[in-house]
Length: 461
Image 1 (cartoon, rainbow, N blue to C red):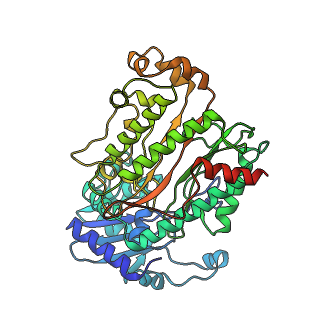
Image 2 (image 1 turned 60 degrees about the vertical axis):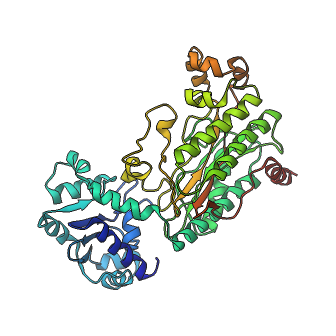
Image 3 (image 1 turned 45 degrees about the vertical axis):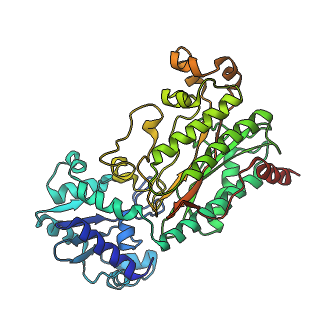
């Protein structure tokens, strides 16, 4: 955890932003895989961790924005707990580490909250949280989400979105750990291996660094499937392998990197030219990052650069700007350029993209492609973001759009049909927005054609 003063200041700022009422933050409970005591790896709720820093299950914290009172409700340690997990410092001692001086038994939380007239809570994403809040607020479970406090959501987003210097160091560590995991896959992948065997090497790298995954690995020769967790394909010479994987630190700050590389020692000519198109789009987007720039506009710039490259290789035609305005680029790039990064790999996604990635003035588009852009708002110094353009050739999309007049105008379908089995390419890095631009998070990871081929050539020699 961070220093006690960090958590105290965060809580004080939250109360000042909100101004009044009682704030309740729910820590996560243990969650059984297939029966109650066979637990998944415990992961604390990110907002609870941000304000209270304690990595223990079944905690409930309340802040009184009017009086400044802070209470931690916690289960009492039993003899059974000591037998199974060993002795721990008292809850009072652990609470003191984060500056909380009042600890009460967990079973008193419901009565305490029920006695208050104004209770602010964040949108619950776990069913057990829904049931607790339903009981405490006397709402039906179906009504709990609608009762989440917009004022609290906006206050939390305003704080968590801007990363402090110590948070930036955590993000550097997460990105570095992620880069080292990526390198393990780059070095170990071979024709004849199954995807899960390469994933095992990546996991070994993460765990040898004492780190957990920040999200389930995407490692696939079928990169046109954006969230492909299958891991069952066999690598073959001539394939591209897309690896989207990141780790999180002990304080839960996430890394999120993607590299696409040849299973063979070198890219084929087609792979090389499309890889360079994606890399050029990423570099253009990175150069545009600075405070005051809308991420939506950075996304559209990357889309235009993709189209310019695709025109050069003969897969698109016409004017690049017009093609992007018409949405024709979505034949190849169906998702968003990136997202916020922090304690969650899609930072604060449980609080709602409306509040995290957009504003009351800038609403999210419903158009194909743009509806998948998680972040559109103006960037600020201290924001952490990913930049991850890609090209994804999806045969079903080709067939669906073949008769569309807009796509016929900009897409060379005859040539595109010869790429139906191409797959996908994504290149992703993490950045912190600075006062005058941006800074790469973590150790630089090979991504030029020459760098990738040098690693693959050495690995296979």
